[in-house]
Picture (tube, rainbow, N blue to C red):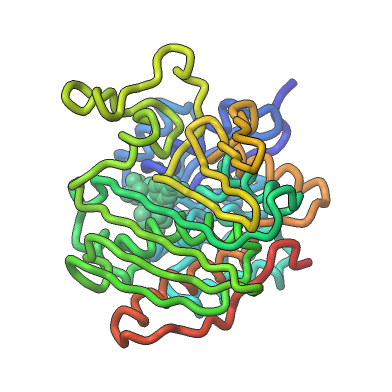
Length: 370
Ligand SMILES: NC(=O)c1ccc[n+]([C@@H]2O[C@H](COP(=O)([O-])OP(=O)(O)OC[C@H]3O[C@@H](n4cnc5c(N)ncnc54)[C@H](O)[C@@H]3O)[C@@H](O)[C@H]2O)c1
């Protein structure tokens, strides 16, 4: 059966190619064309993906067979691409973060709503199957009330090649906006969505160039979430998740002496695995749960349950599942308003770090906010 819904990809870079790979695994969606302002990227797409390649997003959304636009241009260009899709009556999936500022994101979200097109934002790690499974543990109530969630992530984000624009928060970049857009999306999803206030610190730089950040968020019912991210490369969280990283593959195989402390658990635990983004741990009135590279460990007074969700979609595959559901009439989770709320948290970290004071949040929404 030919996949019926054509997706145009704006930006044939790292994210654009990851979405193209997910489209290749989908029964419902197919890659219908790309737009990239760089001629070499357009040539690569024509050669590697054998689809039409346009210079301008406006030409891609007007092309025959493009029903949905996936926006994977740099964040400074997200809003203009959403506006172009809305003008053409084309539904949109936009990469995170949604835009550079809350105002810019809200303008794009309103433009899409006024045009009557769907807008999802992702892939963030809150689409990943273990994170959704953790939310299900919260909702089913088997461990009592959720009390806290902690997310900790150590990467080499700053050791990878970066331009000055990549480290500029006013361009929608830097550690807090790029990686906080994952981490706060995860914490908001597990905690129910609507944070009330946030206190944040950044360290090793400022304004997007920071090497790390830490934050506490308060939610309703006294739920507290904490986030720690360090991108300086001093430690790598993947050592604690069997070498599994954000793409859901085994990316590190520790050698001695690290293998004595962080060994892969052997072939029994070899793939399938899910994407992992550091360590996420939740505490409840009567138990706890921790995200693993295959799902969850759920602790209660009887012992521990191992929850395997490797057969459920994560990442860009999960984005396409949510998109299919939305096109079939389901209410979205990761819509524009959801993404505005996560962006608001990221931007509030910088404000709180600059003033030393907590920031009250004004654009938060709960899950199931229809
Ligand atoms: N969800 C994730 O895990 C994830 C991973 C990587 C990137 N991202 C997000 O995806 C976006 C792109 O990041 P990337 O790392 O893929 O960037 P990239 O630099 O690898 O690719 C961006 C591409 O967009 C093209 N481009 C730039 N401006 C354009 C314009 N106005 N019109 C058409 N094409 C244009 C560039 O030529 C380039 O090919 C960012 O918003 C980033 O935050 C998300």
